[in-house]
Amino acid sequence: MSDPNDPKTGAELTLIDHLIELRDRIMKSLVAILVIFLCLFYFANDIYTFVADPLISVLPENMGMIAIDPTSPFFAPFKLTFFVSLLLAAPYILYQLWSFIAPGLYKNEKALAIPLFVSSVVLFYAGIAFAYYILFGFVFSFFVSVAPDGILVMPDINSFLSFALAIFLAFGIAFEIPIAVFLLIWTGMVEPEDLVQKRPYVVVGCFVIGMLLTPPDPFTQSMLAIPMWMLFEVGIFFGRFAKKKQAEEEAKNSA
Image 1 (cartoon, rainbow, N blue to C red):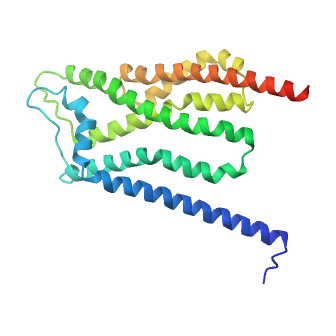
Image 2: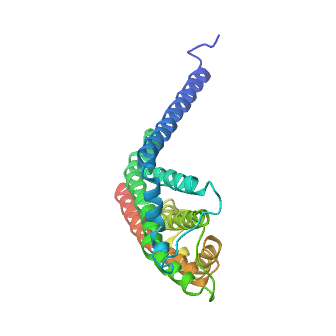
Image 3: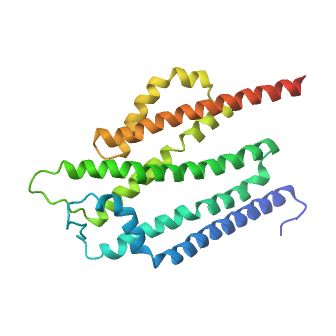
């Protein structure tokens, strides 16, 4: 039988407590996703129609989307509704993550973590909004306009959903670049001047990532690469500001 006064036993119990807490917070997050999904499931077809509207609106008159797979009319809106539920639950999931790691952070780390959590959610949503409200209109209009004569443009609903979700994730993740750059600078892993010197390589890297994450056309790739570059510059700007403030506080503490 274990001795409760043994430090190893205490450490083991602490680890078990952390694992139990982590399990509970994961379960709460899953329940939140499920509750939102159940609330939205009735509107699954409306949600799909809303997301597909930028494509449907540019199709030729009396043309629409098709379902090649007999199960697509059910499963495509189902998958999209689950994705939307996950997005809507993201703030609560991040809150659970924050509640789990906050006790182990220092005061200055806590002061920085909350704005970073909020900013990461807002930027992810902004990336999806940019893709939907700006990119989709241009891209679908271009694809429909270049269709050869005699070709009826009638996209499959599953193919469109795969395309849309890939674009949403690509832009959502790409819009997190300022957070990543800021953290690299704030932690001292890189200096702002080093990133400025590597700017040409970063620009090329943005276009390479755009090529890998978007359909194989230069227009769509540029619509992802250019915002990524601009967001990289935003991260450097705020990273410089944080670095300067950090240096001032160190100088004040050492005085």
